[in-house]
Length: 89
Image (tube, rainbow, N blue to C red; front, side, top):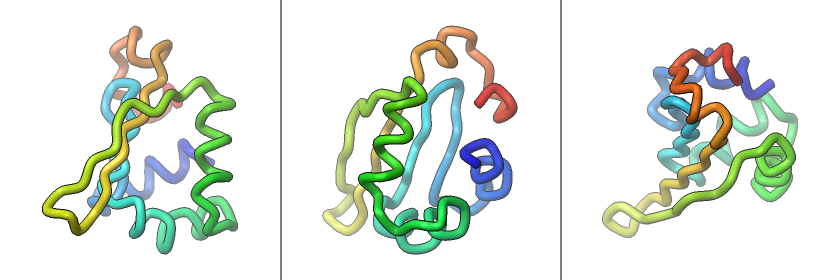
């Protein structure tokens, strides 16, 4: 499902994939719109557990102008291969 989500939501501005790095540009928007569409839940903690299970590690979260929270997750194995391809997920 992660692969499908990244493929279809790449132009949404909410989620982005870059060489092993998963970027959630707005956790609130992701939780309200994208998460229920692909994972049948609005529970971000459930999604976070799944990322951890598949080897993703939370790198950093930060707010831009205090309005939205951006979160960065990395899968070191995928980052080491340097593949920007979504099919590597």
